[in-house]
Image 1 (cartoon, rainbow, N blue to C red):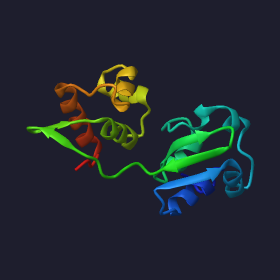
Image 2 (tube, rainbow, N blue to C red):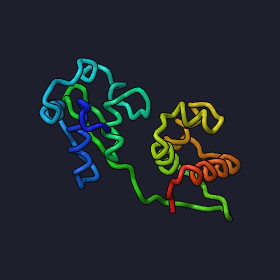
Image 3 (cartoon, rainbow, N blue to C red):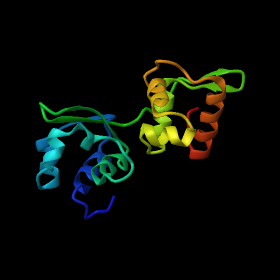
Length: 158
């Protein structure tokens, strides 16, 4: 995040925070920035998405180590959260059994949205969504692929 960026003060505020979760009002964010948020920040949930490309505002919180956890457009509040660092890892022999939290953390570690992550794995985006919401768990072959991708990405899960 470049120091001259409009969103650098938000980045700096979050980077200096030692809290796992930070709740900010839109007014507080504007106070940090010394200017107004764009109108779309107040009307479009997508403006607050954790995407790694094409969104300088998302880069501000993601490079500070946070993700938007929840958003209340009516109350004009946003909750930023540091992704979990410790996960429950289960195994079947030498195969890691990937669960919803672990999959989501890997995807966020890689700075990808569900569509990008699905493309990386060669699956459909709804599959990623179903894994992350625990609708079902990956098969053993997919778990092995997730382990390979995690190791290649430098994702620490144990």
